[in-house]
Amino acid sequence: MRTMDLYISVFAHPPGLETMVRNGYAHEKVLVRDYDELSGLIGSGAQHHYVVVMTQGYRTDDRAVRALLPFDFRYFGLLGSRTKVEKMLAGYRAEGIVEARLGRMRAPAGLSIHSQTPEEIAVSIAAEIVQVKHG
Image (cartoon, rainbow, N blue to C red):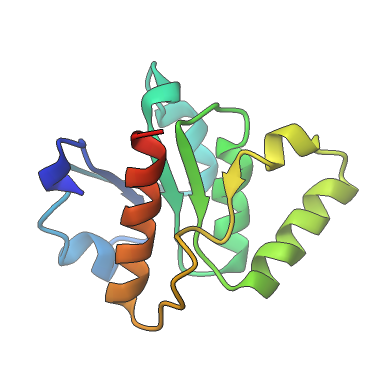
C-alpha cells in the first residue's frame, strides 16, 4: 500500500506488538493506551482515509470500531471471520446504531477470493481498497 502513494499510519496497543516492531512500511507508528483514543487521533479529511481495523481480538476490535464509527472514511474495513463480524454487527444494531453507519463498513474486509494465509488476506484487502479508490 505504501508504494501506491498512500500514507500508512499504524495505531496499536500494547507496546512490542509484532505489527509495530516488524512493520517497516508504515510512515507513522503510534502507540495507544486504549483503542478508544482513536477518535481523537483522526485528523481532518477523514473522507479521504482508508481504514482497516485489525487488532488482537474481539474486544479490542469492538473498541476500535466504536471509536471510528462516527467518521465517514473513504474505506472502513474490519478484519475477522464472518461469524465474528456478524456477531459484532448484530450487537451494534441491537444498541440502535443506524444501519446507514454500519453499512459503510466493509466487514469482513477484503475481496472474497477465499484467502487463507495472512499474505492472501493482505492482498484481498489491498485489492478492495484499490477498487474503492478507483470507484
